[in-house]
Length: 69
Image 1: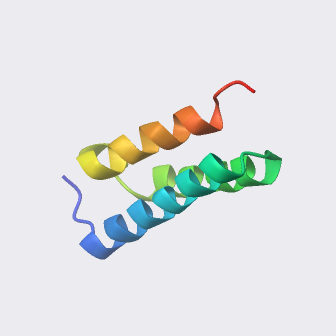
Image 2: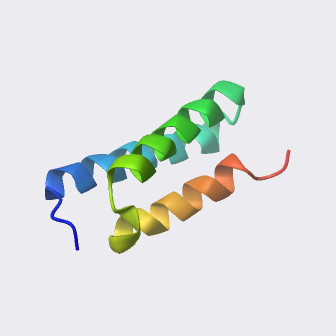
């Protein structure tokens, strides 16, 4: 397992939760784009699959981004 500063994981969780809230209350093109950008950075820079809390939130965020209508 890669050594990652726990603060980075906590910050990633906070960013994902912020995107989830934004999408729940205002699901439009700009909030979806912002959420996709956040996901891209997290997936590129963190071993997110190794952290259950982060992984669960990412799955939820993806479902909100790609839900129809």
